[in-house]
Length: 283
Figure (tube, rainbow, N blue to C red):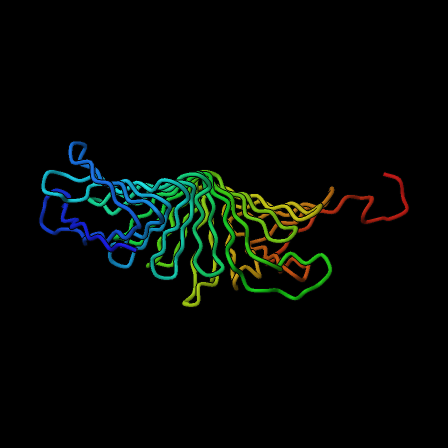
């Protein structure tokens, strides 16, 4: 395999610091000087710092000083940086900004954490990713394996937008969020998830407006909700209310114990229908 090094000293304005060079390796190279582009083919590996791109063919455009401006992958692309891995059907890397844009079922994985979207923009300099129309799986702590338990498997989240900060160990889901674990479904305007040092889900909290919860025939609503203990529990706060059939329950705090099919309420006030209080009688 031929080894070809193109200096990528293109700097974003102001030009105080040049980005790292791009090392592009391939079997063949065709240079079109008039168009200021180079076509690498036969299986390509492009490296910039600790970011590595792999795809069947690469088209690199450069300026009059032979500084690489943009790298376009032709065909499926795989990108790796540290423990994170990204795949897509196509991708473009802007060398000046350090932004990698992926489209065609872009998928981001880091350990057991997985995000799949419609479009992914990854900032290689800041180690941050933005996705649109996302389905995500977040590794969560396992609750007791009881029949019908909600606290098994990952927390699955769908959202219109996602911003994932690798260094900050935080993911912000926005634009209307649906989070599910087992038979429990939560809906909220926004959900922010945080992780421990091992990448496991430490907790997640809603913001931006009211939340609703559904678990079989049980319904809940509140001003906000927090997944705690690695998503083994869900806490509703801010005028929480639980309804099941014609029965309703309010309190200062409602806690769903996932995996135990149990709900705990602080300072409860319950309202039961007459038929439930006096079984066997007609209303």
